[in-house]
Image (cartoon, rainbow, N blue to C red):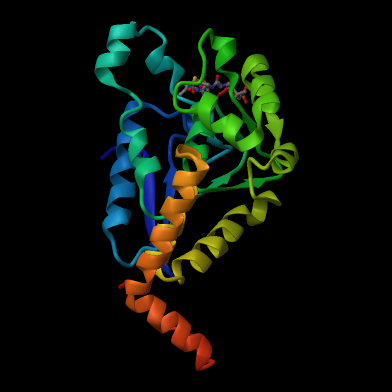
Length: 258
Ligand code: CAA
């Protein structure tokens, strides 16, 4: 049987670990890999025991981009009909938080995939970039939209127009990643964050994720209205009653996800 293109594992503490698994081609994201990834994400999304996902690479990269070999000879109509990026939407639409643990190359579609996740943690050796311009194209899976929102116009223009990658340290300064770790503790740190999220009340976690994402998609006024409705809605949850009662009774809360 062929090796899975994505290795999926359920870990202690409500964490789902997903590992891109085409190390020989630096986890180049071909259509089959992205379909498998979307399926594994959906399975973890349905699993009530999983509260947070971690997505990482295998070998010496997170992912060096969409598969150039697969794309090179395509016509525009081939691209339009096969919709290679359709399955990528599943990752962005996942209701549970996803942490990207990035080491080595995160280029092109690799960086775009990391940016579809909710938190990016990078190893000191990470190189993050949008090199598509060097291939005669532009980022096609969100790079021109999510990158400027993450790092601002000037840095995004520089990265997309030169195609040059930035270091993990620079990505931290720009706010593209939330922290930088030594390579050997990257996964450990991502899993620690994931466990910390997975132990929180799941309904509030889902609302918080959706509210923050709405900050990128709506006006400030609409986002604030959405946040307030979600805040009020959470008072209908058992977990809100439990969380506040536990605080007042000075005991740890027992959340049920209801
Ligand atoms: N697609 C297909 N294969 C890839 C690949 C990609 N994006 N990136 C690397 N590979 C393959 C190489 O062809 C090579 O395979 P072989 O051993 O069979 O020749 C293998 O991975 C190892 O790569 P290198 O020998 O090139 O390794 P290196 O250490 O010398 O260089 C690198 C590493 C700088 C990342 C270089 O591989 C590279 O520049 N890769 C392409 C990066 C890129 O342009 N990404 C953007 C793709 S387009 C895109 O992503 C569009 C979008 O917006 C969705």
